[in-house]
Length: 135
Image 1 (tube, rainbow, N blue to C red):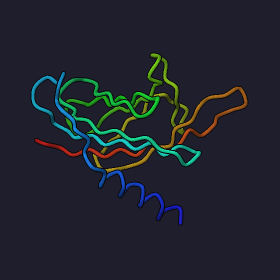
Image 2: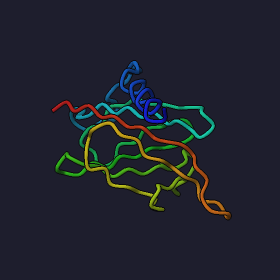
Image 3: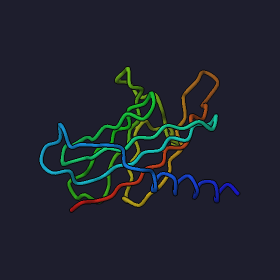
């Protein structure tokens, strides 16, 4: 059942209508259409869609969070980092305890995000990401 709900959410992400997006502020032609869907632990969600170009970091605002994708020169992988929109410090951590994770594929996938608390870690939710290349 859990796998089925994850697939359904991923389907929603992929099928989500593209919000009016422009390449304003981009350098050169956009290379990727990035879709991000954050399913929070309380079953609420936020999502965002944006064009990303050749800049070193592409940032999307998803609810109260800034999702940063740092593309490598090879174009086959990227680094992922999540911060709160009102600060530079990362708000969230991944399962391995790091505030940044490497993603080796552009295939749609999900990663679990956590807050650090004095008592340990608290699950924020799952971040689903899909990229479409325009090369």
